[in-house]
Amino acid sequence: MSRQLRAGEGWRLGWQPTTISAFQGLVGTNEWAVELTQPEFADFHRLLLQLVDVFEQMSDQLMDKETITCEASSDLIWMQARGYPQQFSLSFILLSGRRAEGQWDVSSTVELVNAMQTIEVF
Image (cartoon, rainbow, N blue to C red; front, side, top):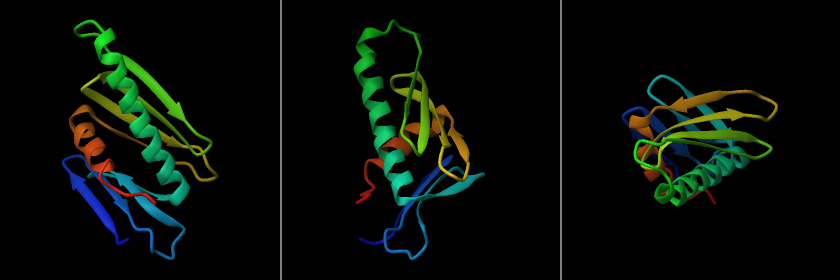
């Protein structure tokens, strides 16, 4: 499997499984980026899709203009989605030995989620 890089307005994702570096993944925006290890990137991938699933399940239970906030975490990463089921912002904090955090605004997350679904982590 070769390097996969996706980018759009306000977001970037990358995955390079064949690198000799400890950091195989990348998440970021136009202004910042942080490299992730394979386990961190796998958890980011899994938790993001889990949050999207929760938002989709909640969509028919919400009133118009009602927003929700959902969190998901592992030993390596904490994530939060906030907004409407089809439009939400996303934040994360790395919980491992090194620390990093980042966020994407509402205008970036739909494309970020779609791109994440196309990246093969394993």
